[in-house]
Length: 279
Image (cartoon, rainbow, N blue to C red):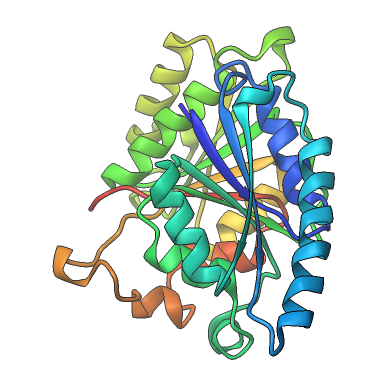
């Protein structure tokens, strides 16, 4: 599970809330957290100095709000530069296994034209990324949905969800297993081989679960199901499909908003964990 979390902060407090919700989960409780605020370049030295001073205050408030008793497990970092490049560089330096970022949920070309940091970081990051939209209320993580398909990335997302939920006490945790567009012969979730296998694993780990099927546009259905089921966290496998020689170049499908993960990122009404795994 996640041991080294990198959270970028901008003074709005949503990402800090997300970190606190994660730290309540037993399997993440002992994670170390790097808190990063990035100040973009300024035209003058005076302006840069002022922005760094403001950034230091934002960073200090963020660190203060994160509920970690051991100061050795929290690492504040104030950096200057292009935020996209800095976030990727710090994630690599810290060997972070999760990046948490705020997201304005811009879609398609809007993300490019408005210079979306989260969109570009996800393009080039080789690690999972949890996006918290500006208009989403961050809740305690009890209800987790995994969007399943036969891909290895979806199966690994299932394992991540089970690891998150298995130790949550009080019987509050529930895993929702969703499969959109199953085989045409499947008429209910109990007959879906993919869901049956996932349910078997959940039962073995003592995780309460429910299974749902749906048909239609995959992205729209995943978002609808997450809303209908009042999901606190949606986990979606998102394999890196680029060849190794192109790892530093954007994936055009995601960049232009035509991928499933990009649609869900923009339209889901809950935080979305885009679980990046090698293809």
